[in-house]
Image 1 (cartoon, rainbow, N blue to C red):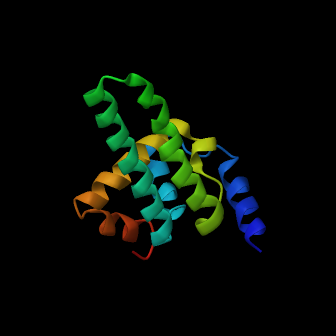
Image 2: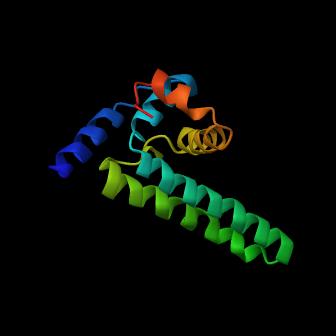
Length: 123
């Protein structure tokens, strides 16, 4: 059954229907409806910041190559196993990255709940 959900997500995204980030943002939140999906994104995004800080502090910039691996591993794990949809990264890479950071910082500051409700997602 989850394969059907993945294909529905692919079909919805394949139209490139968004022309602004403001149009994309509610869709992004809907694609992250499950709390565990968002939690895994937060783990990956937190690791990105930790790795960046470590790379800069140590002077070993090779660590910067680990940033996308850490971030995308947890995000894609969430999409394929929890949310059972296709990551928005495949169709909207720039907006997806921006939305991930926006979701992360809104979560950190306690402002994500109202955005989820506006997008029709139950917190």
